[in-house]
Image (cartoon, rainbow, N blue to C red; front, side, top):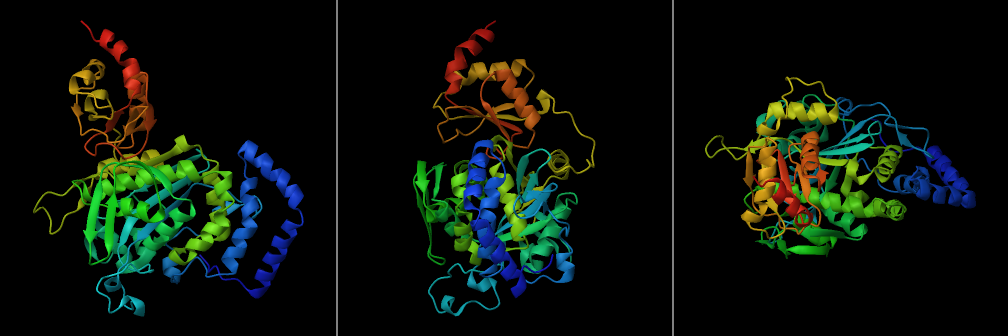
Length: 471
């Protein structure tokens, strides 16, 4: 993709176009209110001019210089069309998002201010290991957004460097090699663009969005003087600042390690999506972008960025699905380090179902008896109170059921979580029970296919289940 720098003539033309839009403010105002009512795309046009001004009058968003060979890794076709005024996605688009946490030893030329300190501070760089990896699919055909988390410890082949943890790909070859590696892991899926955001920018971004309302699943306390990393969060529903949200996102000192952190990332992402994708927030996009632009490196053009933001604003929250690369923890002494070992068959199934790749293996029927169903209670019920629920499932053929660790967040509505991405099977369970809501995400028990996180609505249906399971 070509550089986002523009000539003086292009800048002048863009500013003239922006000025022309201001002269038609009353007409634009009518279109804006029509769009708010209809959920249409005119909201996007209202911020397009300001986004152009932010982009062309400051540091380009693409801060890395890719070689022609590296640029060729990404799909060069346009992903948006119809001009800036009504920019829209023209086809399904896959974006690779990398979250970077970089310390001075990770880079060749650390900033002078980071030297001669008694600790290792986070620095604004895009070198080093990628702490977070997400493949995001924006699909205008199905009107869905799919977020696939790739555990940083995934053991995979990095071209020219052997079998390593996948987060090392950025160290060895930047975003291009990372995109190649992710594509190879996921059956050859195409990757259109990349975004790298430094951890310093994540805190600024959440702060610019006004913080986030999220349930902290448990007390979290961690101290690392070597990095000045101090995490101190109390369990419960609360409004987190950007810095506090970053603590929640970075915490990984529990039995699930990085996988538990991915689950918390999905919780924060869903909370941010539900509270911020609205016309009020979209109007603040230029301001927000200006706050975080120094911490972002992307080969997305402004027009493409507008198209993605606009699509996200029009997507129903129930059409946002969050998955994780299927796999398992490596056994002790199995390898030279601890890894997330990917399961190829499960990956093929998931990529076929959600990313449109041709299935490489014969699909297996998700019959009830083969599904691993975990039950996580959020109501404080004892096992005997859940027995009618278990009996109903068993009667319908779900024989592989187990009680999992309770779900910490009190739920009003039961969540039926498609942990392995099998939304159809989760919907079948919901239909059988007659209550709850299906969530395609990876926040359930990692050993399950379906996790039932029991909410208060269970009490409203408990008597019905007790009567139906009596001999």
